[in-house]
Length: 556
Image 1 (cartoon, rainbow, N blue to C red):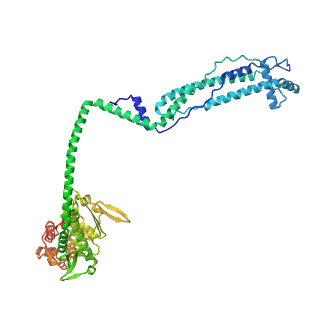
Image 2 (cartoon, rainbow, N blue to C red):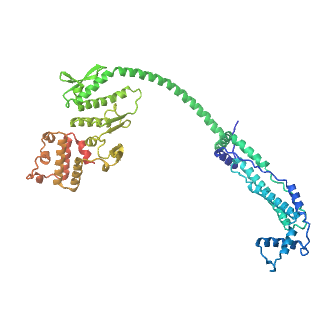
């Protein structure tokens, strides 16, 4: 059965308010109506009562004079004055005694007491009306309209009662001033009083609703949902939507059938992969032999020993062999142990991928790999890291998938191992755009985002100076800067001067660092311009396989 149905705006607003409501209860009105008929009868009895004069005073022959004399007696009692405030004559004690006898009879006092009692009862009833306050805030939205309407009715009844009590109170006040005369009987329509039954009935409904709020909110939520569905159905033909649904279900079932078939195929492939994995693991010793061969090739010109494969689970996969003698691991220096561990780790990166059924991205961390290594090993480590992050062996590291983290406190190592050099690529991006560099200062990480923020060396400063001199056309000063750069480069890389210059006369003429003595005039006689000097300077690095080194500093 279709449940969609559009809601009126008022009903929709009510349901939305209901969803925002929290459980709350309201309180009934507890108000007891007085016996208004008996009150009227009692007041009529009082105002129709008349005090009979026990003492006759001829001058008090009207009610007005009696009231005047009574007020005057009160005034003279309070002020204790002997002069009449009205006529200025002496107030005789005999006159005071006469009036006191007139107004102090038991009958007068009794009537006054009845009047006071009636006034107090009326004040209590008015106080009850004042205390009657209605709280409509605690009601749920669907009851607010009825509650507000019933509140108006109750306040109208309150106003009627206020008027009733004021009238009979006024009658008692008038009687208090006319004790010796009889007043007309009140002819007042009795009020209906306060009818709280309808309001209290709404309280009961509201509180029952509070007990079932969760189910009511769910019902409201469903109605709003079906309202939105009805809107959508009005916007687009339902039959079209139904056909789309049927078509989508058919497509889903078809794709699911194909998916289940592929799931079966996947299970078969996984089994085959497991078989292949077992075979790969059985070939692991062969992989270890290959790793040791590669390590020996890298260390061949740097150490007097080599690693020898030895298949023994208790002693590992290799021995350290020097000539025909095997050396114990304890005989190796800390630096030698470190370089073996470093190179072995590099080789095992490939094995991690081989063992994986489904390759996962790698996170490779090098924690200060330069520690306890001499300069020769440092260059070997730098070369290995450069080959790794440049993706030259993708079985070990894929730059666009894997992650590499290098930690160091060696400034020279940091400057030489940095990826991408100090130049911009064809898209204008620098190494700072392609990698993240951080330095620790005062125990806080500071990101290096530009060359200005990066660590610089004196050697790097020489290149900056050379570029400035080149741009300004200072040939002589350029030559001096070039000599200092070459001197530093040869010294740091432990190169022989002859090997570096390779016997080239042009190089020897311009860059031979030992030929510029005080009386040497070669710097004054060379004919090359600044552009030719730059080209010669570039070629000497290129001839030494350090073209990238030149470009990284010159193109910075």
